[in-house]
Image (cartoon, rainbow, N blue to C red):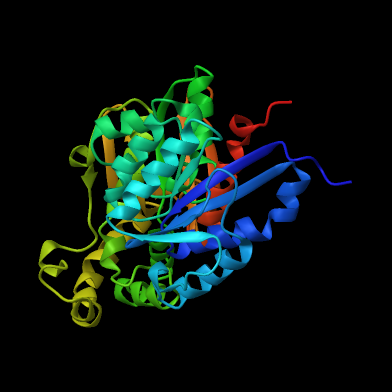
Length: 384
């Protein structure tokens, strides 16, 4: 006998890149699992950077699974949503009208069935949409770090009702970093320090350097394996780690911005994107960094330590960069592209809480987003 549906979660997805597409595929493939749990996720709208696909009647219907599968295939092939033929019970709106239609859906569903607005984009432009959605009583789920790392006032607004927001996938993909931090804080156990290797790319690079490989060689290998962005400087500059650190610092109550974080870049400004093309950086720029990196790795090794690229959040603020660590520590033992986070508090003072696992990848991140959506199901339960 089928399980009665107890919770229906209408969802609007912003962003159809790698994470967004994996999320839609997970939602479709998990239908039987969720049905057994009495939960139905109804995707009522999907937006990319130029347009919005929305169900004709967001109150009672969603985009069917066949359309979602076709949409994922089209986006994977590089086609925009606007290229989809108008077949079925949906409407297509282009920007700027698309944004107003998202607000219309949030207004309508926010006061009736409720809505989960999911941000899998990579832009700051969604922050006002997110704030408006929260103001209309909607829930929001974020994989996009940028709405939480802009103005502190925006962060406050978004997390003002913690029941309505989930953002586990902004730090460590699907790892339970945010959940662990919030649970420790809620228990009254003050967190004194967080140290984390939160870049799979830089975790891989630094662990490979221990084997005597050249920095330039390791970075190129990481790029060939798909570990880096198309321009590796997006990883080597440390800004992605800094955004994750800022989210954690703000959770600990630090009213700081990106300007307050000391970020060590692994390349000098004269090799930056404004001065050198990606091709020239890979061909002739990286090799210029080999000697200095080799010297730092050797110096750390002579003291029995290893180098790791970490964020460190404590009472003196937040730092992001290379740090010497003991070889036998959780961070020192890190190999490959895993993320590792150490949380120190009164209860975890001498032996920190350690969280380790895959902290990157579209599939892993999308799974974390789906778990966040499911975590909101109690807010959408139908009256008995």
